[in-house]
Length: 280
Image (cartoon, rainbow, N blue to C red; front, side):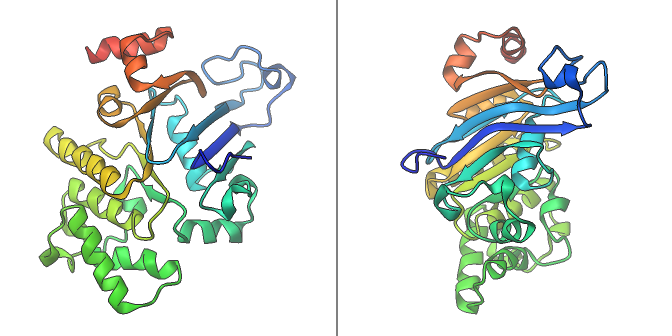
């Protein structure tokens, strides 16, 4: 269980496996990438552990198939984990393993203030035919608050915080650019003051100028709300800009972790060295 004075989130031995496994791969024998050569089981995430601390940004970087997005989807409850535990300080005072929670408890967790999700694809996080204000208000209502004056003030505050003009709050996200849609997603994720914001490849597919604006916005949001963030990216330049600490993943496992500056200046693992070299 977490030290409640320290970690906002504590994850231990997270395991996500597709297939039943066999004696060979279950005993941690060498795999072909993250696939068992004998039974074909894919070990998407293999015994990953990490902590997230108050107000910090933890970056998770790796190539496609490295397991970084699978870690995030496990925290979203989009994937059922095979094993491991996760304790969130804001949820049940860090005493309940969220991976072991019932479906009803998970719905409460998803609707409450405990975590905010921002997907790579805004279609997964927004109702495109609702107004932008209604998207934010939906999250507030889901947490049990039906005070109209509060919702109105909160939606204006959050949409302004992500630089959506008040005059456009009645427009649906389908009218917006990809970068604006991501900003609406971020405002929705912040609706109930979550302790932890989960950002999965939020700049992928955006033009470079738009990426820069979204990244600058994330930096401002972190400073304004003192929120903890897990930021998943395949791009080490994004991690360099935002992350305090970084985990490097390859084939479902963490191959290196530490302060971002240390990893950039003195990478130890050959794969991390390759990533850093590609950034230079």
